[in-house]
Amino acid sequence: MRFYRKAESAATRILKAFRSGSLPQAVAPIFVRRNDPDVPCRAWSWSNQLLAALAGTADARGYRQWQAVGRHVKKGSKSFPILVPVVGKRTAKDDETGEETERTFVRGFTSAAVFR
Image (cartoon, rainbow, N blue to C red; front, side):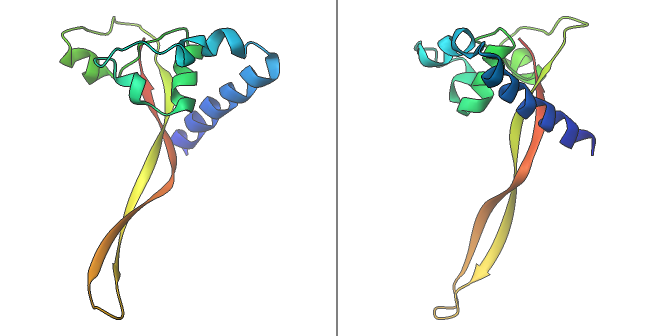
């Protein structure tokens, strides 16, 4: 239940930005693309990039991602949540050929903490 509340708060934050009209300034970094292959959040979904922009940053990473590039999260730094899909796997057997195939599907979403 704890993860559901965090994911819900992230979705609510996006909704509030649309309603308040503060969206254009926050989304400018998303649409103005820079060629930064070393910034992992450039590959995030549009909604997660929006959450990063609303948090006031163009580069956000998880704790270990910051460590991997030789940087550290300051003690007391506040994280913000992004939405992460929960993926499941299912094995299906084809009746005609008898071949088994493994399929992945999205069960829902949870949240992950990232830092500026």
